[in-house]
Length: 275
Length: 355
Image (cartoon, rainbow over the protein chains, first blue to last red):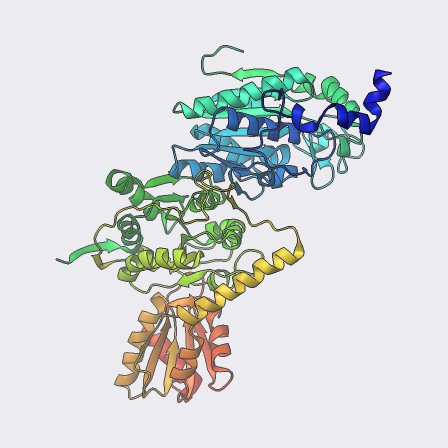
């Protein structure tokens, strides 16, 4: 009886008016409206980018740093990140986001600067900039989304594509003998004296989403407190469209194949302890 | 009181950058311009707090310039020919995003790795765009160490006035040679919100520096806007120097260092009774089309002289619209022509001369 009444529009309206529910005292979960535009994202269903964007916006609001942050968008799927994040941002040429971020941070050292880059951008065409930015210990955050494929250009092999993994340019699977090995660039930058906080996270489960958010927050806190080097966060992510899987399957595949190769956790922390 | 110093062109330019209140320099060593980076590394930070960073490549340098210029600070880089080639993608982005900045090319002989001697082979690259897409730089060509210094402040003025990258196109000889130079007084480094800069979100929504406009009608609009701006620059910013053109039978056109050698050649010619004048474009973009047309209208011929295979000569020909015969003499690969050689070529090509 109750259920029938709830489904009946007229009864529903007479019973509860929307305004009476949507009060600030009743809100348990809301979008970070100040730092995130209220607009549909162009990302494919199930893609990790949207989640990471939202986490950034949440951190900006919670830390009250919307006016302090300046972001750099890459070339790749997240090229239009500035259409979603309502902060000052600069678009960068393919691979050069960390150089652009360096330029900004050097002339505005009190601002909180970050680059947001995919695997092709950061670990193929931009490898030189990535390594040297980290080696100089620029006080910025490099946020690295690794889904092992070129998303925007339609699924070509990335520097982080797993051995045997299929892409449009490794249609029979990545043959490491002819195509080279996947690059664990996060492990590489963790070895450099310029990095202060290097971690690998994911956003495919609520627990991982929370850990990634914590990592982003920590990175901005380190930078805010004077920063003694580069913070580098890799987020291992999925690409349902180009992996040709449902979002759910892609997360399962990621867990079974990507995570053993790119294990989650801190590679380097300021205290030297793993969190 | 005048502050006079004997300085290398590269060092005078670097000193002028400090005094102009430049906020940041990003660069990479390459001969024959490394003195700019070296001088600034020694002098800049301790005197004005100016940022000087040796990047890992010219590609990184130009993208650091892009990032820093987006904040509205006075930013610059310098390089020489092969390094400038590496920067072209970034310069195209800077031009489209309309970021003010100063670029310096101390031109050396090419193509390829070429030589480290002076040349003017980068004229096309400098004035016709250089990178991909339809864009222009404002290009200034100094011919003395004094102008190497003076053009720095002028470049920043023009860059901010038009929100456009400005290039000082010079060469290895001007960069390396020493001359007396009068230095300007130190300007304060100033920083203001220009309304479009990314300095951390202020009132209103976040600002964006970008050259990406996916919708074709939007991208065409950007192009139309840029072309309109270039037109305004062509109308207002032409700079040119002419010597003894009023009664001249023959006129030599040349820019930069070569123009000075041509002045000597013109002197030698007048000693021989041949009336020769010299036109020196100071801005290579905007090119002094009208001025060249006007100044050469009574001339029997124009000799264009360059340290390349003939690049500016195309613009000279376009300027005179076929009304005056235009001949060319050029040396390449780092060879600097002599005044005698230039006079000989002028006589050979127009008077049926000495050969």
